[in-house]
Image 1: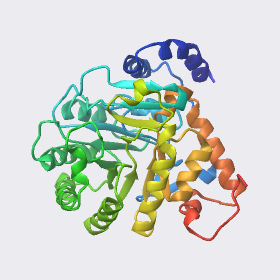
Image 2 (image 1 turned 135 degrees about the vertical axis):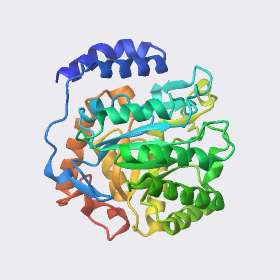
Image 3 (image 1 turned 90 degrees about the vertical axis):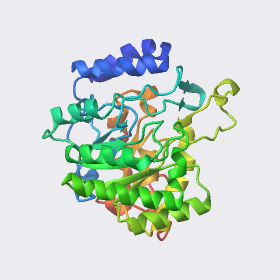
Length: 361
């Protein structure tokens, strides 16, 4: 409750600030340790095992919030079942010119064109080593530097160093803010990249699950190709999805014209649709992580029913604050119980099976 009150006292100041400055101030505040833990014991129905890992709950923090792995333990303390840090690149880079982060309050969305700004692999790994061995599930999201021509070399460099320090790895080929990055989702390029990434994981001497994060803006052919490559490659799962280049009509023109990826509430429906399509294409054979637009337990439940074994969010906290984590989990637990599910796993992909009454009906 103290953390909830602190946030609501600070919220007017944060919302009045430039969005990126507010984010950086939040990271600094979390590093002080002044935010008391908000997470308590999770309802038993939320416990789930995915990728051979026991998650206390399926609700995670998406990549992008903690780019340099500065505050994973503070975010776990808010009640997240897992935290994904990054995207990290081998060398530090400033990213795109500022301003590059924009709130879209009327649709509870966010537009960003950061461009993988981060302090680089050395700083990232130092932070992870400092917390290594502590409880809590932490993932590492890796990418490439803007100027690198041979993308695989950057992903390989990151994986070899990050793999021993995290519980799972994510290959990010879907940010719209690094020129040419999304072309790595094409069939031949993706097959080559994933092969190199798996070899790098083997060389690291560890075997954390390796996941691929994809965009929502894919053609039917793209999705079929990605599904085929993913199944052939032997990677462990898929994260669906990154931000979108689409601009719904209700976004004000001055914001709609800003370059970058849109996240938040407008991404909920399209990302969930693509999630369900990948669940069908993969035949439920690989675990999926659903991300994009979650702002309630009902949203998380919709992702799970569409095929997600785990879910993530980030943008909604811009508007709702840290207390949202607990609210999402509590509502999700009620919805699962109301529909007669004893575990999260039982509900995964429910929308693709015979019709069943839902808690909303």
